[in-house]
Length: 118
Length: 200
Image 1 (spheres, rainbow over the protein chains, first blue to last red):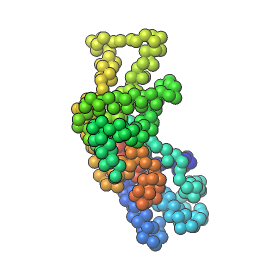
Image 2 (cartoon, chains in turn red, purple):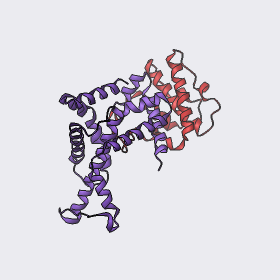
Image 3 (cartoon, helix red, strand yellow):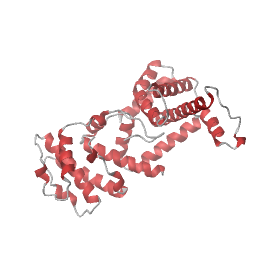
Image 4 (spheres, rainbow over the protein chains, first blue to last red):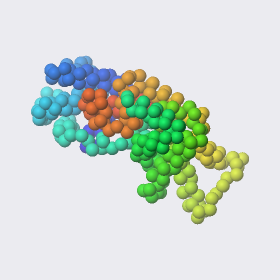
């Protein structure tokens, strides 16, 4: 797993993380409906730290769905988001284009007695 | 999810003495139990085989308990995983304790007679020496259900259950017709929710 792509869960309160999750679901549903959605339309009025987390997740999905339809997203495709870290973006594109993360296919147990390892 | 029903059926067949059901449960859970044992033994000097020994021992206790009808209320996947995880935790604790004894006594068991010496370790050892009772199994299963309820979202719940059943991120994404990235995001959220529920 590329270091810069590791989740930054600790930096986002759960209420915001839930909201980010819901918005990403809507973004994905829009992709699945057949019309590529605009990332800007889903960012709304979010402010940091929610905005950065949301933007990154939306970009991950955007890269994935663009790759599925045969596109080859490039960093320039997201240059309009000036706040994005260039190294993170390059890693994100490389990661999504590389296919499944081998670590994600390992069958895990739990971190504790009843808490699953995610 | 369909695997829920299959585990329930497996448990029913196992209780009826069907050895093929035992094999099915073994195949479904063994790798996860080894992984859990590895985590429980973390920091402990051990051979690579130790975590498998712990998982084997836990399975052995589980199957013997089933044969003896010790878990009459065990009827579904939630209860089964809670019970197996409890067994692993206890077997791993036994193993760590035995290693400490070997260090101290060159192999001779150091037995603390009772907790009257003021050492809480004795009481802990007594507790760890017991196999899970039906009451404890039920308690663990209830805690498991509470954690699932805390997710307050049917999709998050489905993702958590699938992951605990050993499905990969890619497989869950296929089942739910979404991007693997969405599954990773949801798993991250689930972990955050459960860490808060369980406290520091």
